[in-house]
Amino acid sequence: MVEDLPTPIGAGVYDVYTGFPVGDSDTGSPVGDGVPLAARLGLEPPRFCAECGRRMVVQVRPDGWWAQCSRHGRVDSTDLDSAR
Image (cartoon, rainbow, N blue to C red; front, side, top):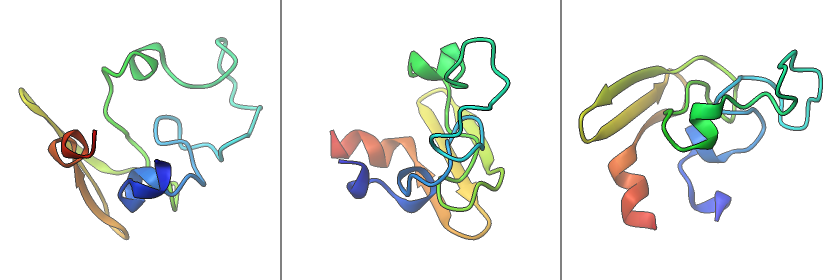
């Protein structure tokens, strides 16, 4: 399923919420996994590109969000809803 996601959130090299490499245990988070609680509950949009780790431009709307990486393009939450 991750392979079907757009590159900015589906590449899997970097965590889309923290920007750390996936599997990096030294995140400095008191929770341990480095993912914020709001993100684990599905309330937080991705903030970092999964492929390059760059901070993305994020716009939150009443009906969802969009996030754009300067290198890998834009992903919209409405596009992800159609994939469910």
